[in-house]
Length: 250
Image (cartoon, rainbow, N blue to C red; front, side, top):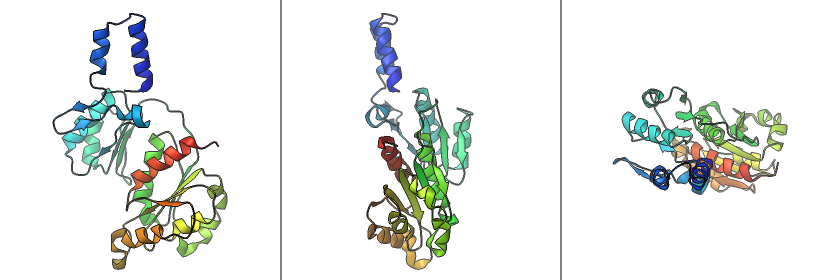
């Protein structure tokens, strides 16, 4: 339940438009709602500024649909990550506004117009890193931070990044996804005065160890201002970038 809806509800109680018991019934599921297989945290938006997000991996299509239905009925925007197309079809029967990003594997529904703020830039080293980059971009977008994208600008052809230097300089926070040796966040971190969130991806040949080589490279970055999230965690990067951008002055 959104903050404004709670305020409206309390105002109606004060003006005696509705009875206290009616308002109480509306607030019963505010902390969480127990579906048996899932306890939906409806209180999360009040605590953190954004509602619970569905991590779909390991869930059935029906479970994802039922959780989505309750989140939407509570008036929250919906974001589901690591979702299959079948899950999207199940959610779409509940709300035809559901949108599926096949590359990012996300399902999203915007319940109302948000106060949006530019300033998030999502950068990918290569085209193979796009699924993770798009997950980050979709997360930032539904949180009210529509991102700018700068893709396939890795260190194998550094002139591609340098030619977009102005985009880097105008960002409030930059997400950089990279696999292989994970060098790109260090390069970006040495060019800008804003936070850089590095996302190692599980892209590369055998010795990349499923993204571990990139993770270690990013953790050992000599560039200041580089923070690292888990391997393939585009969602975590997009969420953190949104919080940073929300607090920025420009």
